[in-house]
Length: 140
Image (tube, rainbow, N blue to C red; front, side, top):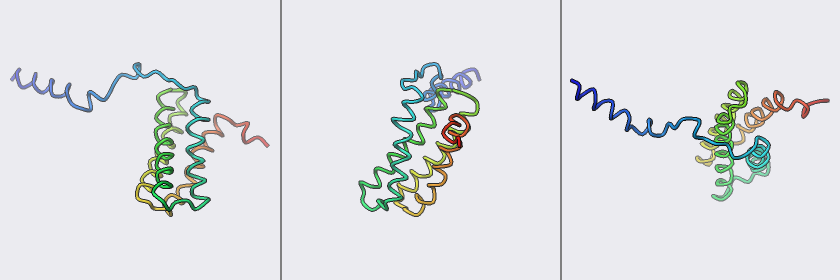
């Protein structure tokens, strides 16, 4: 019985999910929040918005741009959570992850209508966060 219990513990410790879950303290942010926004998030959202508004979703290269931008948005949400700025930030970041993932799936399927239908969600994810954390952008 002790052998089976030991074997089960060893298997749990060697499972891919256990190995993939490194303690959060091992992650060291490299970019500042401003760098994440200016260098990754803003350009990625613009790539998606411009591709849809210009009707540039025909070639494999154009779809690749949208897929890459969508992944950047989704993974940026993870980076924002990793930074653990504030409890509200986590909810906003999850929204960015969700919409980035949805755009990626639509772009991967080369579904221009689905990508276009997600534009309002991309804008809403950015706007809702900015209204909370950069209200001066919306001052009248």
